[in-house]
Image 1 (cartoon, rainbow, N blue to C red):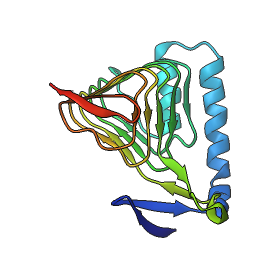
Image 2 (image 1 turned 90 degrees about the horizontal axis):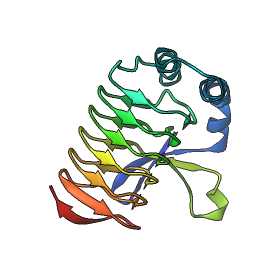
Image 3 (image 1 turned 120 degrees about the vertical axis):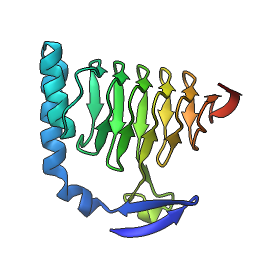
Image 4 (image 1 turned 60 degrees about the horizontal axis):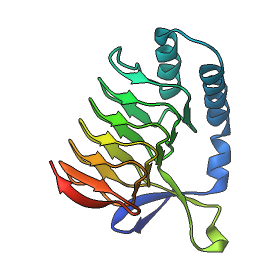
Length: 183
């Protein structure tokens, strides 16, 4: 993989051939997600399927409402006591970390991938991780873009588009999200 520095954040560039090489992982994840999201399951069965999708055990005190979507799955880390509401999408190639006691609202998208602006390289991907710190609350229908960290105890208001880091204890709203208060 080639490295590039963009907007003061280190990002990794992935070309389409590298992405095609990952297709078996994507296919397996899609099979598991289809089973998870289309069949009735007891909570312990859903937790087991999600554990298989992300490649690590999901804590018994973490709740993930269905449907749940990801493209790879194995690039997601979920702490204890986390609540992820329905219809959350995680484009996780760049890595997504959700720390303990974080809340993710329904319809939220965590996107770690972006395409090049230059049309000659548009099929190449820039990837950069997302980090949701302890006890953060991400409201409904929020979009979090690549490279963003949402600070401890921060609140992201419904419908926000988060393009930059959110400081700890801050409340952000809007498109793009801006700090409007501190807790």
